Image (cartoon, rainbow, N blue to C red; front, side, top):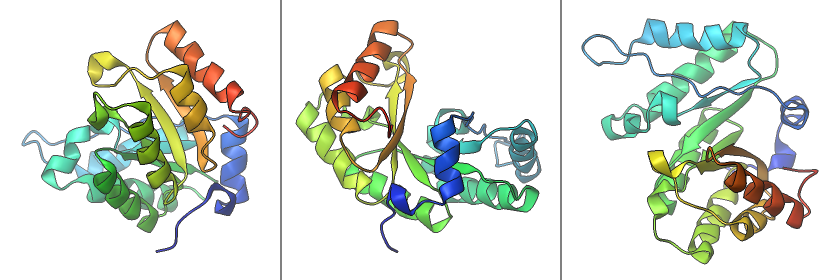
Length: 205
């Protein structure tokens, strides 16, 4: 499968992201036996779409990162994309969560692209203790495969601290579309903004 660049995205999807829309993290519905509840999982997708969401982020925190451990990553992503396509014909931005070291993140990107997702929300939680050079090399490798949404996850739930200089270098990657800023700290939020501006990427990211 060919690599996907942001310039190859449907114009209506790019327009959604540029305008700014709500893209909620899709929850996970389980039965009492802790199996995937297909009926309620579809209902959650339809609920968010009917509520006016501009897209869905699937395979991220409220879908539960642990779906990967039990072989549910691809089925959950597939179910959300399939349900969305059957429920509405309006443009939607489909974002897939990508986690782990580079090999895993690239494998997940492959799955996401095969299911019609437009970008990957890249978690760096697996890189605790890594320096900026290693982090950026990872981001660049995944960005060669799929457009990226950066993810500043708060350290209290597994994220890592990232400097303004990291965000400058990240925003300079050509295939970056956006950044989800969730460190829940105003100064770290400002680090992201400073990084994007320093990269001259404020019209793209």
